[in-house]
Image 1 (cartoon, rainbow, N blue to C red):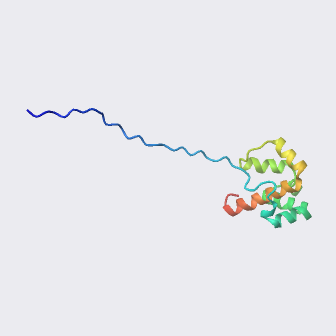
Image 2: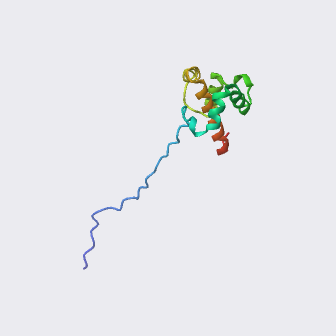
Image 3: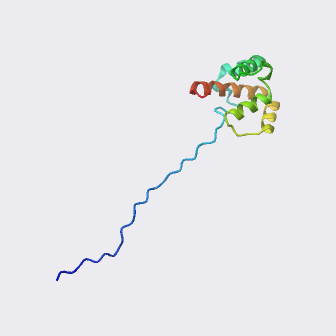
Length: 117
């Protein structure tokens, strides 16, 4: 009689590796001090601050008087789920009003170009 083969290991199921991709938290598309990335916005913000504020307000369908305020920054940040707080918005607008407004306008321009504004 022929010897029967002896099984010493059991077949193991193939385990598929699951890769979990965490969605990135939305951020500003440009930094507060990235003025050189769009010189037109920078020059408009520097020499015609209120005109740029009205452009931002018009882009967001708001009153022209609101374009340069902390409220406008907070509304924009909330709309695009950008992390931050009212305190952050207040301090940014108080300490760096031109940079803050230019950042919003650059962000609007970039989102518009990407088709997400």
